[in-house]
Amino acid sequence: MEEIISCESHWEYSIQSRHFYNKKNVPIGYTVGMREESWGLVQIHLPAHPKISKEQAINPDFAIDFLAKNLSRGKAKMWSCYKLLAQK
Image (tube, rainbow, N blue to C red; front, side):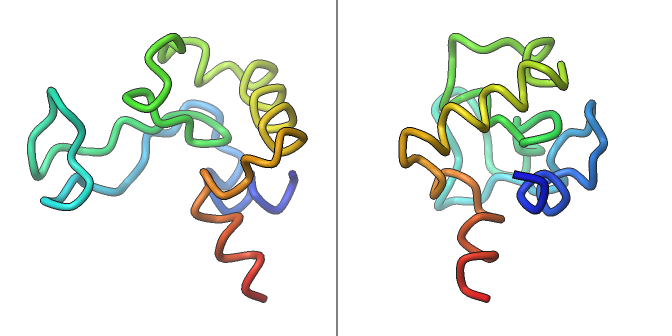
């Protein structure tokens, strides 16, 4: 978990993703070139999790719990940093 958080956000709890949507990954309601709506320690992608608010995503307790629950459910691949770390 620590490695994923370090990779995703460098432990900055309120950070927004530095990535931008392109033709291949733009969600409905967003446009190419917009900054990706991923927030917080674990970079929760809000369009993929519409029941989670930005306030929840940037809450460190919520984010760490979200990461732990999803890892325990076998959903680690939703984090690009997990995929990168798994290749090492």
